[in-house]
Length: 452
Image 1 (cartoon, rainbow, N blue to C red):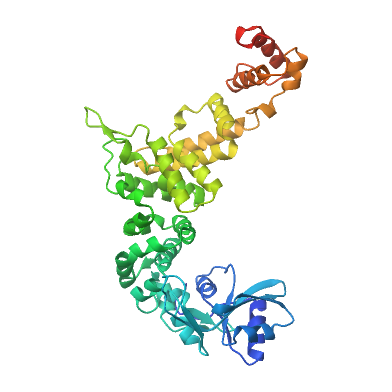
Image 2: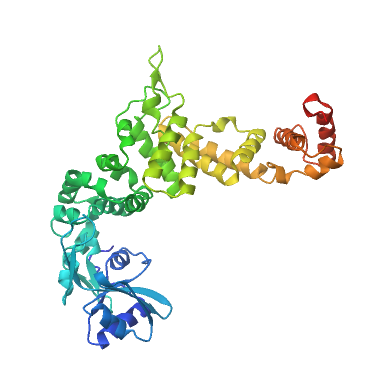
């Protein structure tokens, strides 16, 4: 954001919503993340609006539109204006947070200032008029310029109201590459234990956003205590020396470097966060004082499944991340067309591509494995060259009906012969051609293990 910027571009449709409120005798402002992102030169995903009109009055102003009282208790009305949904929320103050999440009571306000004062961080507590002029009551513009995440008002109060705000602060810091202001950071370290009371579903969303941020490594290094509240299994990795010349860093630093090196997708970043979580439990040292971690991938996969289930990740994500952790240790330098075909047959093309990215990030993060990116690129080229080849039973030019015509009766022999033929195709000893497959099948039928 350039110095002195205090005006944003507001889309014409949003301006029309704001001006309709104004024409009806109410005030209306764009507010929150849309203002922040616009000031940063980004296109907002959506535009939230606040107003002094109470929910029923908002519905009246937009009586020609479809309206839904999506959060009437908290003053929110969703208005479908010219085909686009807008959340319009009445200025409000909040009172009491017995469950450290929801306010015990809400009172509607007539002024914007009181509404902005209840928000979490200064960069999220700005509003804008329909003409784009920015209203900044708490120093959000300055914090954007300096790259700071700072609470509005007393950090301890903000985090006591809703403990999840601590994790939101880290997500924003990782996403934007911002620092956390000292007083806000101090409160996070002091109060992070309160996150244990937050619903796993709420934690999960913020965690995934945090780990997909560009600045995830620096944030996770500085706030490892917070992450260990949420995933206690990580604590054993911090400072755990590997005693192995293949690794320059301890397990935790290696882990964070691997997270940083992976593409910023939820599955890959979670896989790298947890790929070595089993190492402390698997550690042994030989007579030469070299550390080893035999079986750590299997141990880590079991831990990963437990962690992701506890955080209520969906089944597909849990199973896929667990697979990547369990299989992350294969060696790229051994890749050959034969081996790549077998990998594709075993895991499928999508999962092999993910495993290659896991191996790339893991290699880069050792600090000693030169050429990890180049080896991955070569493996990806190899994958492209064999991906169209036969790697599964449906792709074979011979099927069960063909075997029946060759005289094989229906039964377990058909499946056994087909699997043996696929193995032969994968290792290159038989071509995926009908004649060659029929010849190989007849030879198998003559063998005792396939006798009729």
